[in-house]
Length: 500
Image (cartoon, rainbow, N blue to C red):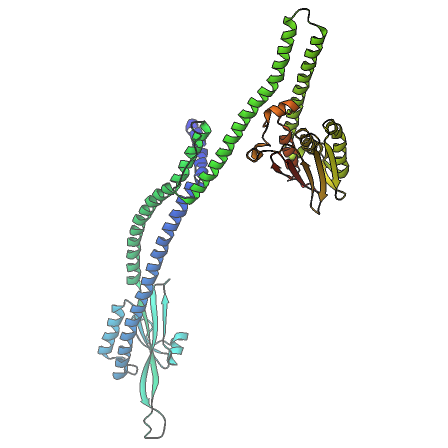
């Protein structure tokens, strides 16, 4: 018993879990919606048919009884039944009417006395009823009591007589002489309704089964495209395929497939970029080490090397070490830029003073190549920025403008602002960038002129660092360049930093 009880304890939660999973699934919800939408009209139709039949059957029965009662009322007056209820013909007709409709007939005179009761119970008694009193005023009434199972009808017994007017006018009036109160059973109607209800229930059950099967098939058909998408996603997740998925069964799944293909393309691009980045990092770090190893091996293998050669080789090794250090520092800066904006140390910074400081630091480099540095500030600017990261970004732009410039050229830095943004424009008279290369300049380790970049010591990471820093400030960077004429970078950053 304990084992069985334990089995139930394990099984019931599993059943509940499956029920919850079914209700949460799109397929289960579609199935339930279609099932409900299919069954509700059946219930409504069944109820409407029974109600309509009952209403029509009661109306027909009431009309038949009314016709019979009116004919019988005329006979009552013809035989003066209200004054002398001994007429066998009328009594026979009243009994026949009572038996025909499985009911009861009361004949009531103008004094509210019951002249005839087909049940023989109330004959000779006085009846006080609102319906009877109204009927004596000429108002007939019908009432259907479904709960007690009968139809009650009051019909006035009227006689047409001459009006109490001057002789010769010919006016006639109807005078109510009594009332016929008829109660008819509706057992036959209820029996027919029960029979119809049973038949409708059978038909409804058959239709319900058909609707269940059709709903199951339709929900399965509607869910099939989503199942294809899930299978395709599972294959991608397992690594079996990286091909784009195509599910064109319906517009929604096609949109989902297109969105996933865009995400998949982005993932492939990021994966390719990651692999290329790792490859470039390995190459860039290995190259100085290889050079240093070659120089060191040359010194080791040679004997009695002159001091001048030692100094030359050690100078080259020091240069390679400096290059390695610059690559590592740039990589560390790039990693920091890849972090979330929560790492920003936002403060109010005087942008004019910051740009002036950058220009002052880089002026010696420009002077060595006779590059003229020009700074133009159109208005005072104070903004909420990370001073360290913005300094690094702008320094890279100005330094690149100096390094990739022509002899005796110029670099012009312009600072401006409006009520929302400040802009820093760095324009140079340098070698420029080919148009086909512009879309790649922010890629890591990408160099437009590799030989020139090697010569001036570039790592290919400067613009990547710059762009990351600007994007972290919710800013933008745009470039316009003409090969052989110069390059113009424009940085636009909000004056007030708003964290998202």
